[in-house]
Image (cartoon, rainbow, N blue to C red; front, side, top):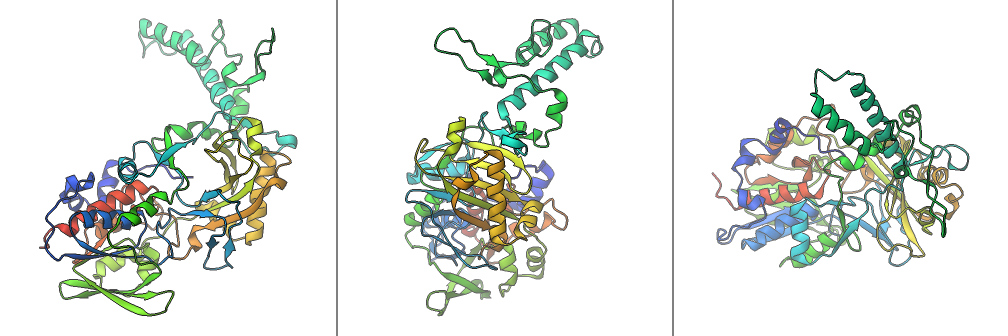
Amino acid sequence: MDRSFAFDRRRLLTALGGAVAAAALPATARGAVPGGAKAGLRVVVIGAGIAGLAAARDLEKAGVEVVLLEANDRVGGRAWTVRGGDRISHLDQDDQTVGFSPGLYLNVGPARIPSHHDQYLGLARELGVPLEVLVNSSRSNFVGGGAGPGGAGRVRLRQVGNDLRGHLAALLETALRKGTLDQELSAPVREKLVAFLKSYGDLADDLSYRGSQRAGLAQVPGATIEQAIAVPPLTLDELLANPELAAVLFDENILMQPTMLQPVGGMDRLPVALAAALRSPPRLNAEVREIRRQGAGVRVVYRDRKTGLAQAVEADRAIITTPLPILARTPNDFSRATKAAIAGVRYSDSLKIGFESTPFWEAEQIYGGISFVGGDTSLVWYPSGNFQAKRAVLLAAYSSRESAQRLSTRPRADQIAIARAAVDRLHPGHGSDLSAPVLVHWGKVPFAEGPWIEWADPGNDARAAATLNAGDGPFLFAGSHLSAYSGHWQEGGILSARRAAALALQPRT
């Protein structure tokens, strides 16, 4: 899943480049574009992911001539939406052709937008890209992989969360009643806290926890006099034995809290709109082969992947959003420090496996959200929108880090079978409903070769981000991997790009 935003203040400032970041134009970082660019200024932007597109748009607004190069045959980078007929290439396997029915899609890269990601949302508003609610978490989702017969072992998120609250509230009330906290809390505060705990945990009149309708219903209200009956409560021991218990905190993460959003029709809608808004369209299939200094400016050589012909672009500056493993192999005239910073970084790993299916999960009252199943497949993510349709796309695996590395060592057919089996354990009998499998392993995707950077991982050093954020003569670097979002979120890519565009407009010293 998307990794937590875990930088503290010191690491954040280090990754942003310290004083260099502080010196960037603050208005531009918020999306305002300074006018009056130097007459004739030309900037080459390498990479038409969300960062490269945002940088190009800001530069064009400032009157700059922009040449935008993209090695893929599409824009968006990791903001990639696959549909029926699309081809998926990996470096080590044969291509896949997506077999989804018309109108269906899967976001194989980023798939959600927090409501406080103002840069992304501002661009979507400006360009008229419609958004819809993404159900990131539903209390109807399951916690646990359903490993027992008939799905035993799976528990609704509402039961796990509310039974846990009830038991913890009852334990704290017992501690208060026994005087354990008399030294820490005054009598009036203890009295108010007990009253709150009764409501918070839905405790019985004797302040014990005996279950709650909040946790789910064993019997729903009937047409006449049948009353709702709560499910029997799980014991605290049973709750703590669930290896996926932490899922109850998933949407407490500031980056996962509702309301979450998604572009209508796929995550690639904003990159496509950005590209369409540029005066100079991106040059697709333009694989950069050299990045050189030429006088005070730059010379970038690229190969047209369709014709095989080499071409060169000369410009005053370059904004480079290329993933670092690829950049490390590209012949260049960077300084020794810049080369070392690029070469010393290792990306994390991630893969997704999706299927087309009938929306059988809706029969179990699931409309969106995520069930946490553990293991190498990690989760099952249900689609948001177009509810009660005849066909839908289910994300059956979203693996990261070590789980993705283990799973990806197997043949593709085995990975797909493992994901299908995980769904069948969770929703018994429905593994056979899954068709048109799609697998994207980001560590093997051409022109990406990784999903994001974990700066806290052994061997990675945030000082490399500071070096790249400082720039290198006419070379500026941008991308979500250089922001405090650490490559996990498109918002970081836009922030980094706008900072780089602002620096490109400043006179060089």
